[in-house]
Length: 297
Image: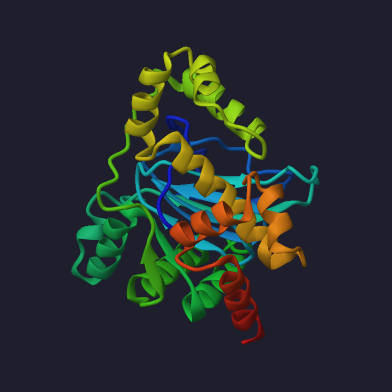
């Protein structure tokens, strides 16, 4: 899916780390991910086991599905968002999240010649990396095992996972090469109010002037403010967010595409088809057909 950024300006998050661990391993289960648009110095590897929503990495947005595996590099803004439009469930989200610093094994650890491939992997992860195929399947198994072990076996498992990812060809970058995040947190509240308005009205009408009012800015200032932090105009962001929701419903529900277009906030089928083609590179029918074909395989 083409790049788009979460509207909020990211906040810096402090990753909890006990004195008994060199990196953080968390199994998330609940109604949502409990996180907002944020960044942290740790690299983050996320495996989605169950979720319906979307993820935003830098200026890239894509719908979530079981098996989604993404490596986010240090200080790259991101958020995983559970879609609660159809209700809340305490079992809606299940994911495994690993966070680790480059120097989690020592300040010169990655400078070892044997770690060259891993060093390059983490450098590429500065744009976010999505893994698929056999790589995704094997890493998913190893991540499940990692949550069950402690001490040295857990460290060895993480190194094995990074080695697999470093040698994988089943990978694509997420954020665009020109993405340059603004990591200051001084106007976090302003963007929180704007994003809350956008999500509340996503399936109806998102008005720029109202979004600007929620951000306490003039419409013109809000447009500039929004684009410098997302790399997108407000209409581009809203359309791509709606397309992300449509992608999930296309593969999960037997719904007519014309009805889906209206349900996802598009005024007519022609505009929906045009926007879907622009974002996904194919028509809604082709997207559903492609997903079904791959599911059979």
